[in-house]
Amino acid sequence: MIEPLYREHASTVRALAYRMTGSVADAEEIAQETFARALDPPPGTVLERNWLLAVAANLARDRLRRRKRAAYVGPWLPEAMEAEADPGTADPERRYGLRESASFAFLLALEQLTSRQRAVLLLRDVFDLSVEETALTLRMGVGAVRVMHHRARAALAGYDEQRSVGTRERLGLVRGALERLAAAVASGDPARVETVLAEQATLHADGAGRFGAVRQIIRGAKAISRLALFGAQRLSGYPTRQSLRENVNGAPAMVVDSQPPPGVDVAPRVVLTCDVDAAGRITALYVLVAPEKVSRLPASEGLSLHEVDHQRQGEGDGPGERSHAAR
Image 1 (cartoon, rainbow, N blue to C red):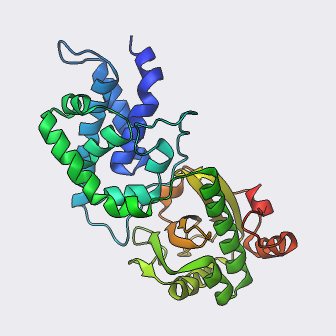
Image 2: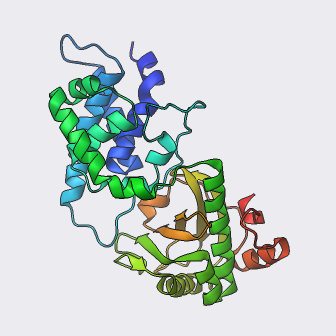
């Protein structure tokens, strides 16, 4: 019977497929195809977790190669998703947890890897397969797995140097930075926006060529401040609500929903999350507006953009405090 197998391993298969492709839609289709193949496996197949991961990894590699060959307008970001919770106890053998490996920073770092390198690194360092299990799963020699794993880790050295593990303290800094950014943008004061940003901050905006989204990475607090205020001004003429979600790709994220009339080139939904430094300043801001990448999150039920600054002023601007929009 396949039902027990599905109940036990479906979430793991989807998690691997998402981290391979950066697409929730692809991950769901890959999981469906994986379990469809389990209904009619090759003779002699032992239906267990690693066989499912092998099928999912190969299907995901095909999707990833197709995506890499296709032209994409502007910076690419993964699809927003509500990340899985990590197990209650930390696993010292696992280099990256489920929360961290769903983050925008980690998934962007994986873009440096080939599809096979990505599969090796994920199976070894996220899903905790041994070298021998990874070799069997990917039909590779043990020596080849070791070499490829070493190269994949070397390619992620820059990420590892700056990685921000999602501790409760770090997630609180992200949450506070997003709240301060929302209040600063609502105030319309560019200098106030700049104080929330590290001097060399970067902005990655993925609109898939739509809604006037910038088509290159923006660098520097001043440039990001100007762009953020311009974006808020475009939304100001329409009903707009925002709320803070606690676990979008493993971190807090601000979701802004607006209701522009038909034919107006304004994104109906914007999702923002960020990386921060030890002082809580934003070092990288990730902005998703492509509808197919933000549609799976529930609608906002928070404050309007104009209410945010008043609420923030009433509570103070301390990094540990939260606006009503986040409650």
